[in-house]
Image 1 (cartoon, rainbow, N blue to C red):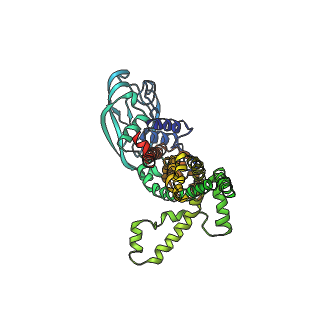
Image 2 (image 1 turned 90 degrees about the horizontal axis):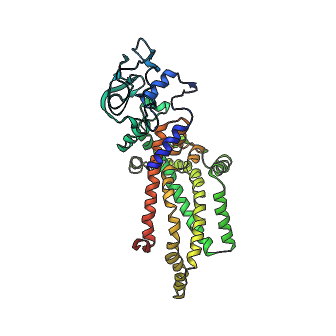
Amino acid sequence: MFAILVVTFGLSHAMPGGPFDTSGNRRQPAHIRAQLEQRFGLNKPVFFNLPSDGAGSEIAQGQTVSVKGHSDTGFETRVFDEPKNAGIKLYGEYKLIDNGANNCVGQRVEPGWALISRRERCIVLGGDQSNIRTEVREGWVIDPLDSQFWQYMSNVVRLDFGPSLAENFVRQNKQVTDIIKDRVPVSMQLGIFSTFVGFLLGIPLGVIAAVYHNTLVDYSATFFAVFGQSVPAIVLGPILIIIFAVNLKLVPVADPLIWKQDNPLDPNFINATLLDGDFDAYFSQLFNYAKALALPVLTIGTGMSAGIARLTRATLLQVLSEDYIRTARSKGLKERRVLYIHALKNALIPVVTAVGPLLAGIVSGSFVIELIFSIPGMGATFIDAVQGRDYTTIMGVTIFFSTILILGNLLVDILYTWLDPRIRFD
């Protein structure tokens, strides 16, 4: 997890541009961009704060910066002189330089670098751009670690993923945690049904192909599996839209509003309709919900089932050639019992390996599919965050995906011991 955080943080900050470079279609004024970067700590070095880097450094004095003055003076440009006793130290005490603003946003930390320092800091408590609530706090700081990454790590340890840096969300002080809570249920619905379709189609198809090895049934199943894995979702999705939505008009092309309405799987909606006898409202919403899910689930599930079918076929063929299968048949057991009781359980061990990544897919859905079908899930959120250089959202979503993937791989190890007791004893 730590390696994922380091690599993702470095790559996201290495991208050209920043979250506050533009406002709509216009370039953000330099003084506003500087204030927003200072407010969210983006004026600090990325990984390590050296004596020659960023605020609180030896070169910070003499810089020309734009700061916000009183409400009647607007923005002004000031040059901060080098304060007394600034320099490279083992220990230092540094105060905020007051610029006369109504709050501490826009004030600068006195330059000077120390291995350990005690500094006054401006803490943003909330509010929006027109009314920012702040507080001046004093605390101990290790200047080499006074950087964006280590500050973010200290917040993550407290399960604080920070506010989103997207333009619309900055005005609302929208937290990354709230964004994930809003989008995860949508992606989970898409992922759960897609995974169900993938296993429902893939395992029986692989079993049939293995049982009827080197026959027309096997060749047909293998063709479907190869076709399903060869055609990417970005191609299969529009094809299904053209056939079932445009030509046959059986389902909507894309219905983003369905995800903002009452979910028929929500217990509150079930209580308000089914339990109150309003069956028409419930089944009408359930029908619209099923139509909106049909094409994206089929697109993801088809590709998923193809890989599962090929893996099931290959492992089952290997198991059917084992000695204990020959022994079971020689004892007179029915072929169905040999296949489903003795062979299939052991053949599913390699298939279970795919459960870990698929579990991450359950909650993440599909980035491309969510864009094609206008589904407001985690995939669309991540792509929007990358395009807008929303560093905190990129990191928050990556941490969430990585946690699910790690837990999924742990679940795979547990399932191994259930499928094969020999692994448990080893």
